[in-house]
Length: 82
Image 1: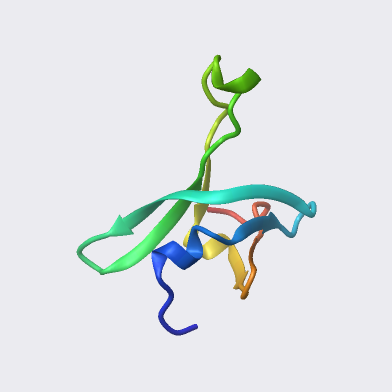
Image 2: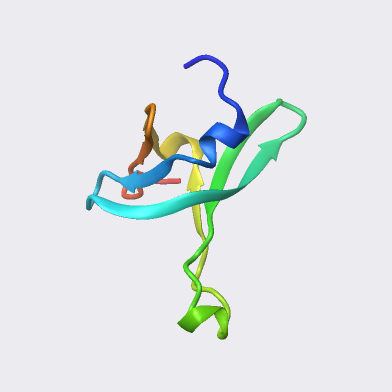
């Protein structure tokens, strides 16, 4: 896959191939500092009613659930076990 900047990852739409649903954009990363690898990324849940009532649940996508990182999108399979 090569080297990808985190700023580039955060600009890509994340799509679940299991149901074709757009999940959103990456809001955060979980890192393995000892191994120097990304363990998972977090898609922030959408805000509720104009942001006044907090957010819905965040979605954590484990590294092994990533199918493909493309130029414009990241394809994930959330049916595949974490």
